[in-house]
Image (cartoon, rainbow, N blue to C red; front, side, top):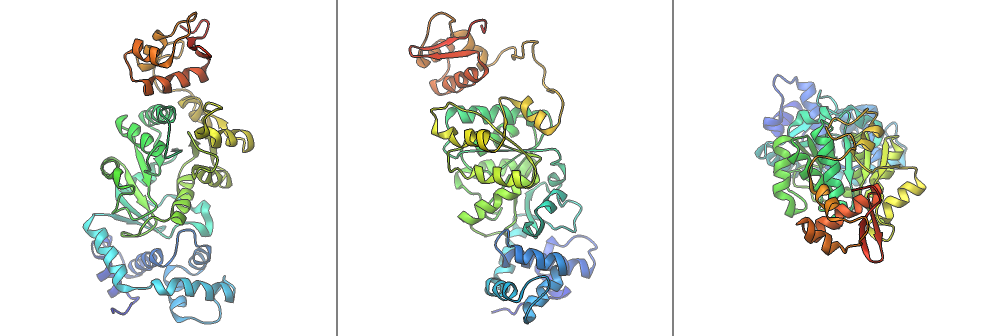
Length: 397
């Protein structure tokens, strides 16, 4: 077993190409100690955060290695419990392995000492990450003010997917970066729409950035890394766990100026992200859905119990961010000149109720796409659902 060493020579050897040009020994040692801390702790470990905040990464690590009765600002019990958690993970071979994986994958490292460090993470206090591992454009982290988090259910409905796509495409296309968690459902829809619109999107992963999770999103993660950034606070090779997913959500909320929950069940993990946004005094918005849909029970809860802003379109998000007006052109009535929404509108009658299948056939679209747009038109008051089917609201044609 390789013995762990904390000195400039060991640091330079371990970091390899992650070393920044002309980095002095003190800065190099601090970078290496920060990397070590990212291996020792689980995300959000406040005891480690307070220790590093008070003593610095290097001195805090030296104190942990030396042991003793206590170390400011921790109580003796906190310090002893912390050492029991951290020291079993102090494995030089494992740290070297993850650093080699980062070097091989051209994965960048950003610490609080770097210019690229997103300063808004300081709002997390002792729960802030020790460093960030970045696949893609490290500089993207400095371009997230303002930015928006779009999150929601993994098992999204066609309605939820449609809303996420509309919001992300409009916002990203107008220069507002979109941040999400890279998961199936709403997350994936938001990332894809932002990419398609040519905007910036950043994915926060619960595991190492060298391994896409879910595996089915490997190609999407690759695309995000090409023009934006894929980010994690845990080192390469780290597996995603339930705890890491929950802690990852605090980063999504902290990095952005507002969190929009598009679709969420009563116990959805997206509500955890919303909770972090509230605790950090960030903006919070929720998209209403059909009152009969369990997939929207969580968003309705946010609207009713947590004072979330009601989001019905991208302009509502801009208002939440304090950005005046829409940056996209449109007609005076707010409708785009030609799109799928227009086709569905044209297939509705103000007098005759038509089934969703009939509307889809008349519009030349799939039933799933049609139902999603009908849901949006219903929210806008442009379509009415009756026992006999759908019809256009009076004056909405």
